[in-house]
Structure formats: structure tokens, C-alpha cells
Length: 418
Image 1 (cartoon, rainbow, N blue to C red):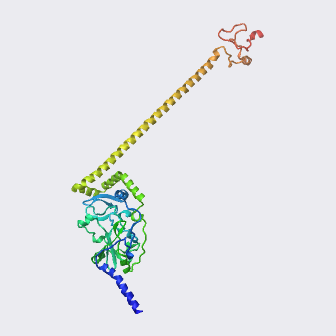
Image 2: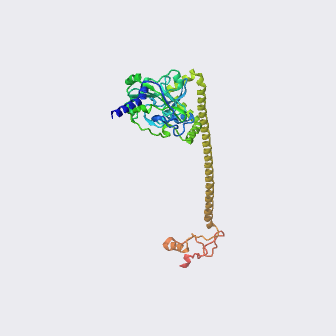
């Protein structure tokens, strides 16, 4: 029984030796994913397809920051958050393609899995240089006996110029908290980071995934040696900035079609930020090699504005034409109303003529319907008003132009009656 325990102890020591060696020496461990090596085997192919063109990043990230020109680097993206630090807000997952940084930032799918980060002394902010080479997370890893730490990988052009990530930009956490969903709660304070960083050793651990030499994070044996529990998970394509072939191609087409609009919107952002505008103007003045590219983009912006103005003028002219057309319609309506009024006037005139004809009838040869009957005259006599002296005698002929009523009897002479 004792011999079996000794054998097991010796085996455990032998298994722990690689972890101890890697903890003390900064020699990297390169894993060929095509050859599954124990616990450090990874998928040879990541799910989905990578982005085809950096134009997609210009198009998709535009609402979340500003694209400026960093001297000796090129066109870079600066997030809207002034104190933004990459690979700070999120958590780690151990996946089938390596250590993946998961974040809720709307542009995390791009800046966490493509490109490189560095700090600009000109702009005083972190910037991201785009690239279409995909990886689970482009960071440097370090470790001590009881801590893991990481910091953004810088662009090669910056590294060759001697730039190093500031010490305060490193994030160190206790080894047992590396996979905690709330890992940000366990970040070591700045004064502790300075001390830990002096003891830390690099972890250079890579694997070939989808034809790219990717940083995959600490070897799993290192987690086991520190009694860190983990369960590898299989990632979703969109979570790590990969898409179906059709989606990736459509994003490229949309970005290229929208390029002029992007340039216009981005130039407005630069002009609206006094600090960015000043630095950009200084870059144009002091870097002739970049000046031509920047001026070409500004010309695109101006041409778009001219196009918008022309389009606006055409639109206004169309409105004027429509107003003229409406005025013509109004004129026609007024003309129609005048014509109708003339017709009404003519009808009134005809009615007046009819009225005049009716009025003229008593002087003609027709019957006088309104003449009082003889009885009415006699009534006046009986009432004591005296004889009708002006009444003509029975034998008197009426005037030639006046015809007496056919039914009226001749008037009697009151004196003869008596």
C-alpha cells in the first residue's frame, strides 16, 4: 500500500514539473492545434467567417466613436468614453478556441477579436488599429504564483518603435477568480499592480486556429496546478465577431456603399470635438505622407455636401413647380367660378325680363286680373261716398287704347233711378 502511495506521489510531482517550470521561466508554449496535445487541444477552425474588409469596421463602429489619424500608425478608432481602457469591462471564458474575452460593449465583437490597441500621447486616449486577422483575444498574459494578468497587445509598428503598455493598464486578479463573471470586482489596485508586475512572468501560449496563430491564454495545466475549476465552452460565432459567409459579404457591400456617408458623419464628429480637430490639423501639417490621404477624405465629405445641396435645390424647385401647378388649379377654379357667376347673372337677367313682361301685361290686351269688381264700386256708393261722378255714361265709348272688362255691366245714373 505504501509503495502505491509513493508511486502516485512521484507521478504527481512529474506532472507538476511543467507547470512549475512555466511559472518561473518566460519561455512560451506553442501548441499546434492540428495535433491534439492533451488538455491543450483546441478546435482547428473557429465558427463562422471573419470580417472581409476593414471598411466594415469604419461603417459599423462609427456610432460609438471617432476615427482619427495617429502619426506613424494610420487611421484609428477612439471610443466615445473618455477614460476607456480595453479589455477592462467584461470577463473571461475558457473555450474550444482559447481564452475569449466577453463584453457587453456594442463594439466588443470587433475591438476584442480584431486589431490592436495602444495609447496615443497626441490625443490622450486609447486607440484601436483595425485588422481583419481574427483571434479569441489579442492580449499579453502574465502570471505569478497566485495571480493572472493581461493587457492589450499593441500594433507591431508601435512595438518596433519601443512603446510598452503602461503598468497601470495591466489587470491582475487572484488565480481563483480568473473565470468569475464579475472578475472586475477582483482587480488589484494600482499600487499593488506595480508590485505584482515586478514578479510576473510572461505566458506565451499560442495555437493555430482557422489558419491564424492565436493567443489562447494560460495552458490548462496551469489552471489545474492552481486548483482553478473551469469548464471549456463552445463559443457562438457572433459572440466573437464571426459571421456566416453571406453575412460577412453583405456587411462589406453595405460598408462600401455607405462609405461617403461615413466620411461625412466622421468629419462632423472631428469638427465637433475641439481637441480632436486641433490634433488632426496638426497631424496634417506635420506629416506630409498622411496629408494626401486625409485631404482626399475631406474632399469626399465636401462632395457629399455639394450633392446634398444640389439635391435640396432640386427638391425645392420641384416644390415651386408644384406650387405653380396649384396656382394654375386655383386660377382655373376662379375662372370656373367667374363663369358660373356669369351664368347665374344671366339667369337673374332673364328673371328680370320675365318680371318686366309680367308687369307690362296690364297695359296690353290681356285681362286685368287685379281690377276690382263692380260690386266693390257699388259698395262704396251705398256707404255714402257719393256718386261716381267720373264714371262714363252707358253710351259713352271707352277710350280706344283701353278695353273695359268684359264682365263689368255699364254703370247706372243714380239720378235717373230716382
